[in-house]
Image 1 (cartoon, rainbow, N blue to C red):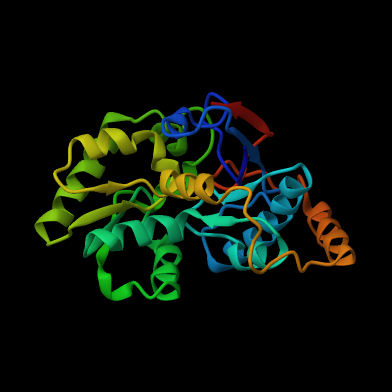
Image 2: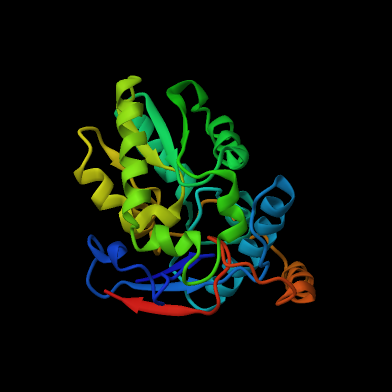
Amino acid sequence: MHLALLGTVPGIGGGVRPELHTALPVGTRLTAWRSHVGVFPSTPVERDMQAIGHLEAGLRAAAAGADAVVIDSVGDYGLDALRAALALPAVGAGESGLRAAAAVGRFAIVTVWPASMNFVPEALLSRYGLRERCLGIHNVGIENVIARVSGPDGYLAEVDRGAPAIVTAVNTAVNAARLEGADAVMLGCTCMSPIAATVAAASCIPVINPLAEAVSIAVSQAGARATVGGQILTNRAALLTRMVDAIKGAVQEDCPVCIIGEHTATH
């Protein structure tokens, strides 16, 4: 079974995140497919640019024989387009995590990003009809973290390695959500996947890792033919590739939707 992770950050040390392998069937292959639109989605402009980047990455993954694609971002960039274009399952981490949290009861979102980026989960809550189920968004990050995202000592590296100050802040936010009446918490970024188990172990309510949820769904759906999809014509695919190639490499921002290369891991 071949699962393609679109736009994934393959861990600061390289390779697909090891925590994803826990529940995978033996022989499952995970491959990371970069978005060649290397911009950080700090506004709706860059978010919509990433929809194009993720669609193009999904087409490349499908051509390489993927059985399902997973958007490695809570933002579900390009999910509708992927489902229209591909004749294989396309799973969004945002949709998967939100629906899993809502299945428990009323929930909150805890994210390492600042409030200025709440437009991403807020749009999804409306899109999936779950705004009334969500008690609120707890932001652990402050605004200046966006300015220091990249590099071995950058903010993403701190999240990836589970810096104690960040884990403590996330645990505090999860507890605050519980005290407000949340039955569950969804982590608001797939970059939080490496710390998800640690946070869950410290919580007395369920903590949903949206990336793990999405991968689990992709495993169950892999190989199935989509009931709709596969509609993109060859000339559209070629045009899309030309669009992305025009800016490929023009901007390289280390972020949850920009990686420096393709990586493969097999369970």
